[in-house]
Structure formats: structure tokens, C-alpha cells
Image (cartoon, rainbow, N blue to C red):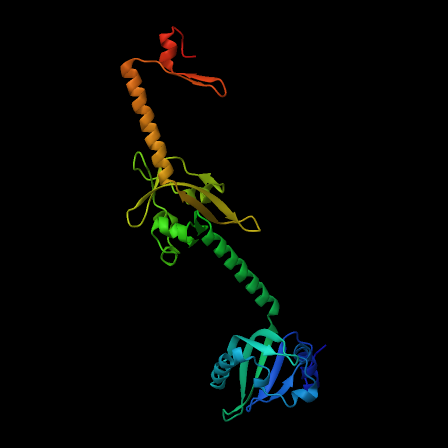
Amino acid sequence: MKYGRSKIDEKHFKKIVDQATDLIQCVDNDGRIVYVNNIWKNKLGYSDHEIDNLYIGDIIHPQSKENCRKAFLEANSGKSIENLEAIFISKSGQSIPVEGNVNCNFDDDGFVLGAWGMYRDITKRKKAEEMLRKNEENLRITLNSIGEAVIATDNEGRVTGMNPVAEKLTGWAEDQARGKSSTDIFNIVNALTRQAVGNPVMEVLQNGAAVSLGNHTILLARDGTEYQVADSAAPIYSAEKILTGVVLVFRDVTKQYQVLEALRKSEERLEMAMVAANDGLFDWNLKNNEVYFDKRYFTMAGYEPD
């Protein structure tokens, strides 16, 4: 059986276009709207009679007019305009964000007869983008408000963001640090040996579990300033349980460390003095009736320390 090639007449073509889910419109070379499909009418709320008197400028939001004007000028030169974003205004005044393609129609001599465009309603996408923007802004405000330093990285350990406290302690501005390895930004050594300490971000990326730094960790800032720091790093997982990065939280504990070091050295000096004097020591807390005896006190009394 042979099938002949069928032609789609204007009636059938209009039926197909009217069933499309995208907003389709055609304008003449004066910008007057000469055809729209059903979804266009439903979204913008105009009747056939009203559309006869509409120009393209009547339905474009003032915010979008300059961008659309430039796009139409490019289309007039024969260029196909893709992914043009604009805001349409319905008859009731509602703003409808759209994205679509625009092309011009030309006669045999190359003169512009008009233009046609196919647009999709991107209201839901714009709302989701706005919600995401607000969430990111709220997160940014929160991170900037807390007293601890925070550095976020991607799944390769590159810095994606940091708060002002982290900028101060590392000596790196966020815009300069973004994209660099966290090892370059968070440069840490052991306070006692001055040897480099393993990067906690890379450890988390390797093991997929949170880690904490041990004592005696020094952060070497970009300008050479040294800070005694305490920190922890935790993995960031997506909803699909994929490791997407690491958040590193740390704080300056230099003063606390100095106090503890001074206390340790004082205790060492006291211990040396007690040894030199061959004295024993006991400490009796009258409130809870607990007594502490040092080892020499036991020995002087003829007992083993235990």
C-alpha cells in the first residue's frame, strides 16, 4: 500500500498551534499583534476583539521593554533569538514571566514582514529561584552574624564561601579565596613541632565523616599572624546522599591557650620546686571533704602512690 504525502492546510495548522502548551504570538512589521494561540489568550485574558487592537508594546512590562527592543532589532537582522526572558502583562495587570524564542519573517526581497515568538510561562521557576535567593540570603546573614569562622568548600576542597570572621582569621577576602584550595587558605601547623597538620577538609572528603582538630593547632594567616584555633569539619550531603562539599567551622582560642600554657608551665615550676625541696603536698577541700596527695607525700609516709 502506498501513502501519498499529505499537506497540512491552514485550518489544521491553526488547530495544532492552538493545542500547543507554549504561548505563540505573531506581530506585523508595525508591532501590531495579528495572531495568538489559545494558551496565550487564556494566560493574558484578552478576547479576540481586544487582541485586534493590541500592539506588542501593550503587553510587555516596562522592565522588559529595552531588553525586548534589542532582541527584536537582532531578529530583524536575521538572527534567531533564543531563551529571551521577558515579563508579559495580562489584561488584569498580572505580571507573567516568560522565556522563549523570537524570529522574524521576511519577504523574497529580504524586507521584514513581521515576527513570531514562542514563549513558556516560567512563573514557577522564578518563584523557586526567588525562594532559593532568599534562603541563600538568610544563610548568608546567619553566617555573617555568628562569632565563629566558617568556610564552605565543594567536593574537591575548593573554597565556595566564607564569612567575615574567617576572612579576618585567614587574612583572605572571600572573593580572593573563592575557587582556591582550602589547603592554601586554611594553613595550619602543630604549635609544638611547627610541622604541617593534615587538612581537615580533605580528611572529610576522603572519609565522609566529621573530624575535629587536636590541641596545639596554629593557623598561619596570609599576613603571617598566628592564631591558636579549635575547629571541626563536617560533610555536606545532597538530598540524594551525595557528598557535595565540606563546612569548616573554627574559632580563635589563642587567649585560652595562652592561659592554659601559663598554668601548665606554672605547675611544672611548682613540681620542680617540690622535687628540689623534697617536700610532699596534700590539698584538703573542706567543702566536699576530698583530699589530694602527691606521690612524694605517699612515699614519705611509706606507702606506694596507689
